[in-house]
Length: 82
Image (cartoon, rainbow, N blue to C red; front, side, top):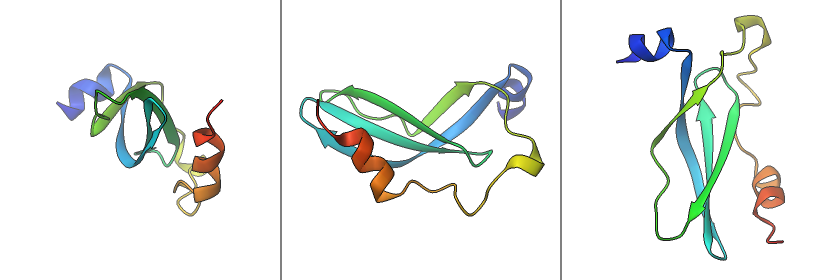
């Protein structure tokens, strides 16, 4: 399965945090190449545990293992209701 996703250019991102904001759930993901992804859905649904992103992973030299976690400040900026 992982080999099929790699051949198709899909990268896996795993759920890191989820937060309910008004009528939505904000889902925060950490990807295998140290990048972060964000998705939002209605409260009636849940965040998928694994998100498949259609893009190439970062090259190894550009990966940042220290800064790959979501910070509270980053999540608060996204979670502000409009």
